[in-house]
Amino acid sequence: MEESFLDAIKGQSGYLPYQHIKKACQSGIIHSEDKITPAQIQPVSLDLRLGPKAYRILSSFLPENESVEQKLKDLKLYEVDLRSNNKDSGFLERGGVYLIPLKEELDFPKNLYGYTNPKSSTGRLDMFTRVIVDKGHRFDEIPRGYKGKMYLEVITRSFPVKVKENLCLNQLRIAQGQPTTMGRQSLEPDYRKFPVLFDRSGFAVPFKDIKVQGGLYVGVDLMGSGEGEVVAYKAKTNSSFIDLSKKNHYDPQDFWEPVHLPSKRKKRIVLEPESFYIMMSKEKICIWPHVLAEMVAYEPNSGELRTHYAGFFDPGFGWNGTDEPMNQGAHAVMEVRPHDVPFMIEHGQTFCRLKFEKMIEQPAKAYGQEIASNYQSQELKLSKYFKS
Image (tube, rainbow, N blue to C red; front, top):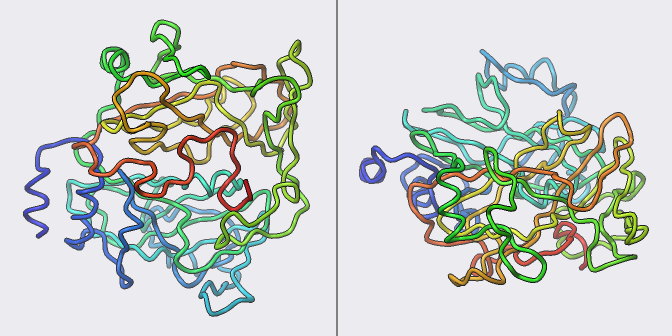
């Protein structure tokens, strides 16, 4: 099985789509003592499950030339039981650093490597998560030919949370060769046929009106449908815990403060330092099924703030299932945290960059209703744990 699967993709460059990830699981390249479920396989990624225990550790770290288990001997403070039959455990305190062994293990051949990133629901809770591996010297990167376990570092910054075994907070993308980042020369003809950015009226934004440099630049929405509209949510710092096994359960007012546009004349707001905000892109975004996109973290030289803990867009995000170049797209939700000083933002201000990359082939399943995606056709939306 493994030989035929690897032969099928030999010599190709790009990320593995749904059908190839499925074969990688069947062949043992990705494996687990608990069977990997079909629901974990996304259009171009695999959801990674938490194991039965977490370690509260002294600090974040990278293992460099050692195994993660060796480093843990010096950094472990105590263990947290995540098993579902223990109802009184699984609590992660705000600001604490935790390390959780993941259930999925890897047996990559020398030509495969990977990247990990938080799932959307994780980022929208202001949970800072990243994967490390044995002898790894960078977060969220799986080296070529890696064989072994993966571990998830979790720091929840705004809310205490309750987690349990088998929950998925992060996802893994697998690549071969050198995935091609689309530059202006390849983006422009593709965009003219398959436009990515749309206005509120459903019309595609002309390519000539877009800032293009290593991807497409997107602005922030501070208007919504007009004066008095909620244009952002700010996390409350003193709130109860959130049980991540409960969807559509919590009242947003207990955890979030709505931020309203003060007036149509002043289309700007000031963000408070070290506060966490949920905001929305001005443009609607359509990621057509033949590409994937990543919302790159805001560059430090563009302002004293950080955007996007979870910036990966599956093929099919915002796509309505047709080839029509009209009425496509969903707004991107941005996780924003200003640093050090108050920071003023204005409606339409450039806020992030969409980077586009190629897959080995188009995925057999796209993001959307078919796989019960949570954020298709979204406006300004909190994570799935809160009531609509």
